[in-house]
Image (cartoon, rainbow over the protein chains, first blue to last red):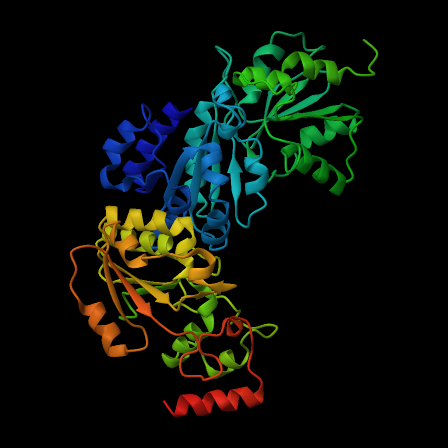
Amino acid sequence: MRKEFTIQMCALFEKSPFIFLTGDLGFNAFETLRDVMKNKFINTGIAEQNMISVGAGLCSRGFRVFVYSIAPFCYARPFEQIRNDVCHHALPLTLVGNGGGYGYGVQGPSHHALEDYGVLTTLQNMKAYIPAFAKDLNVIVQHIIDRPLPSYLRLGRCEIPANFQPPEYAPWRQLLKGDAGIVICVGPLAGSLLGDFIKMKPLERPDLWALCELPIPDIPKQIIEDIAIGKRLLVAEEHVSRGSAGEMLAYMCMKIGLTPAAFFHHHAQGYPSGLYGSQNFHRAESRLDAVDIMKTLSQGQTKK
Amino acid sequence: MNRNQDVFILSKGHAAGALYTALWSIDEAIEEDLMSFCKDGTKLAAHPESQSFPSIEFSTGSLGHGLSLSAGVALGKKLAGESGHVYCLTSDGEWQEGATWEALIFLTHHKLFNLTVLVDSNELQAFGTVKEVASMNDLKNKIASFGATVLECDGHNFAAINSALDTPSLSPRVIILHTVKGKGVSFMENKIEWHYLTLNEDLLKRAQKDIAAL
């Protein structure tokens, strides 16, 4: 999604200037942005704590600031700077984390972001955006600008199936209709599952929803109605269970007295085998693939 | 300081009491505010809160944040072509925080001449002397080696401080202020416990007497 992100940022800079800070990352991706932004594009070096607080200082002078790094580097090490200097002061700083979840694959756990949006959305004023498709960035970047408060943008790999036209961006979108339960998916994983579900017959596949903003906006009426008629619910996400969208959704269901016939959660399991590989390898280890998800959804169900 | 242009950031937020008194002296805080210090419902917490007074730009209290925040403000002024100067007061023990050195690299690299760093060097920290806990050894030369101009003066001598502030420099400036914790109060000087203790009526009278005799 970095290519689309660069295009959107270049376009945005022309109409609404901002400052872009990078922690020495963006090689082969942000050269154009750097050329367009000139002295407003600043490589702050390998010093993430300083980068966040410098960003907060710039915001206090009226600038909009985007801060970029590999996802874990932009929220884990400088967490206190995000908490005290950015969120407590409700400043319009956007953390842009590339490669959310297992996105950096075989680079290993230091480069994975498995608890990012859970941790960040505990902070005051923070909102997380997890685009499902590269095309979503067009709208999300504008949402970020229209909301002058702290935000986190988790970039991933656009996995949209060929020839699929996604619905217009919304925090909740139904991507596919089916009869075999409801699958709610966070971010780009939706594209990967869509590619498999779309090949299945409607009777055998689930409804597929993409969720792209956290904290979770109100649950769509359609999902509430489908749960009420007995559809089983499964949440799939590249994030650990604690602080996840699945946990948030279960809490929201309880608050409105909505009880699914069954609730399943496929989430990042860490490194169960102790082995490392591509993003898809880690997804498979966490059962974040269509085959495992369909197995779970059909547990205890008699075949129609 | 020019209140309309300059910015002061108290990185050593535990010195909030002194900041509140300074704000009172410029009519930003009122006496009732001071009397509510650290009581329930106060605006004057033990560490400064940015929403309490316009001159408190940032809430501080966790050490090692102020210098980066100050660098951001100074860079923002530079990019916006704004006049005015940024002053950041750190403690000496605070230089044990790694982020402070990240900030020093940044502010010297970006030639932030509109930023002056003041180091309150009383050589004491929360649970021992700086030398005992994690000695900074030659802090002056360490900072200078990053490309800053480092000056030193008696931190209790206003003329010396003003002179240091007026000294022209060809790189961002750091002024090490040599101070004595509890200066002028006989029973407080150089005593770590006064990082934590509060005065009772008798001790208050003794302290006032000591200060009056200065």
